[in-house]
Each structure stands twice: as structure tokens, then as C-alpha cells.
Image (cartoon, rainbow, N blue to C red; front, top):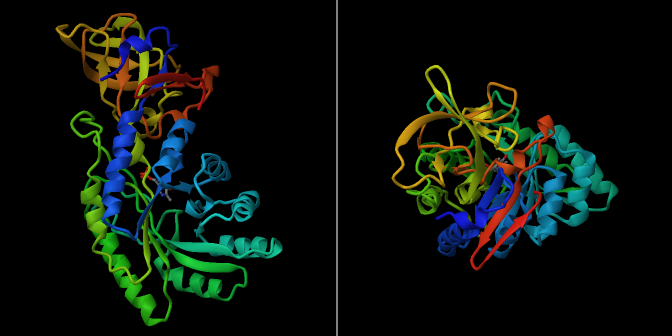
Length: 391
Ligand SMILES: *Cc1c(COP(=O)(O)O)cnc(C)c1O
């Protein structure tokens, strides 16, 4: 499945992007949406904002979920219409808010009362009305679902349930904001659908309560977080979008109400791999090390989250014996280790390894620590392969 001949002469490490798989993934999403006309998907740019990817996202008709002014600009530059761009984040600066207002984006997902006040003031200065949604922190039980890290009351994201009424009331009294909706985002890499089912229940309860108070919301945004199979990328190249959307079908949408989703990882993780060359194979006392030319500057997830990416030896003969290796990078930090005891076909100096499922939170998080280069990207488009130098 990797066009290894085309990799000859390409400077490693680099990201290989299988555009055909991205297109299949986007088609799978659009197939689910075709049966659900009130649903909209905004791609979360922070997972990967590579220009070629944004072009595909724009072509597929998805909107953009942005968390910085830079992302708002990138989404608009890629041709995603402003009325499909939403802007979240706990610390939006004045310049970023102005950028959103100038361009007429669809919605600011507001995370606090002080932020709402600044948006109202800046919109007034500019003679505009700012569309806002309130990011609610639904405090979904983190003890039963420990991987939920953004939806509990102790963390910095969103407005606690106990304060939401006060914030909505404040917004109603403001001249320069227009109340659009409610926003939620409970966490990332969720494979168990139970927390989403709990979220859907919470939303149904909230909609009833608000309706009783005479307040309705045009949009309900349930955020992103759908996980992918890091252990078996070939077995599950495309996430179960149908199963995911089905959970939210439990939400009793009112007439004209839209349900918004902000998927990042689930859209782009599986179509990307980090390709790296083995610089040395070193025999330790008890362990064998495959020292590669990629480091955590190229893919930080293993060092940052103890994440594991499947690794494959692309160039070893098919019948080479399988051995265990610690796959490590060149950076002078002991966390610069991609895997311990990874089973690989016998590794030799010069072999190419693929770190799989690296399309999300990979290249976009690259740094120049140690004055290393940002890895390039190699796209495999049907009938055309091309290398671009930078993100
Ligand atoms: C990060 C983020 C997302 C996307 O999360 P994934 O796990 O990549 O799907 C969506 N919405 C908000 C507000 C986010 O911060």
C-alpha cells in the first residue's frame, strides 16, 4: 500500500499522506450526512492544517472548527466559506476576535463571561453583531470514563452548568451579540460511545429546560473526539461514523435546529504515516535499538501522551525474521522513544520504517528543537505524487 519506489531520493523523515484514503473517509462522512440533513461537520483544523488537506476538506463541503486566528485565516484561504467557520478557544485575543468579525465567521464558541463581554464590545466598535454559542462544560462523570479530560467541572474549558444561565442572561442583555447555540466538547480519542450517549441525554434535558424558559438555540454543537484504531490501522482505516452519528440521533432536535460536529482526528489520523530511515541498529546489553532519523520533533505523541503508533519495516524482505526493537530518535532526551519491544521484520541500517496513524496531531505539532527541519509532506494523489517542503 505504500508507493515505496516513489520514496527513493526523498529526504527523510517525511509525512506520507494517502489522499485516496482521505477521500474515502470524507465520502463515508458525507454518506452519513446525506441521511441527516440537519447535521453539519466542521473539521477541527488543529489536527492537521496542511494546505493539501484543507483543499480536500473544502471540496468535500465540510466546515472548519478553529482554535486560533491563524486557523481561521487558513480555513478561509483554503476556500471554506466564512459561514461554515466556527471559532473556539478559552483565550481568544482581541486581534483574533476582530479577524473573525471582519470575515463574518459563523460563530464564536464562547468559553467565559469576560470573553463574551469583550466580543460584545469589539463587535459594537465595528458596527457588527457577533454570532455566539456558549461552550458548556457538561461535567460528564470523569471517573467512569477516565479519558474524558475536557468535559469535567475542574478543567479550564467551557462554562460550568451552574453558571450557564447567568451567561445566557448576560448575552440577552447585550446589543452586539446574537445567540446562536450551545457547544460541547467532552474529550478526545473516544472509542466507547457511552459518554456521547450521556452527552445526548444531557442535551435533551437542557433543551427541555431552556424551551420552558422560552429560549431556543439554532445550533447544537457536540464537538469532536471520535477515536481511531491505533492498534490496527489496516483493519480499521475508516472509523465507524455511522455508529457515532447514530448515538446523536437520540437528540430531539427542534424544527430548524442544526446539530454540529467537530471531528479532527477521526478524519485525518489514518491517512498519514511518518516515514523515517534507520540510521543505526545498536545492540545494547539486553535490548536492540533501531535508531531512526525521526524524533519527537517530528511526531510528539509518544513522548507527550505515551501514545503508541504501529511501526512497519517497509523495506525488509517479506520473509525476514521478526525481532524486537526499541525504536528511538536522535534527540538528546530519553523520552525520544517511539516504541519499546516493537516487533519488526529484521531491521538494517538504511531501512525505511513507517509510523502509522500519524495524520492527526503529527506534522502540525512538529518543532525545530535541536534546529531540526520541519518534516516535509509527500502526497499520494491518484495518478500524481508530489512532495511539498513545509506544512
Ligand atoms: C480538539 C478539538 C476538537 C477535535 O478533537 P478530535 O479529538 O481531534 O476530534 C473539536 N472541538 C474542539 C473545541 C477541540 O478543542
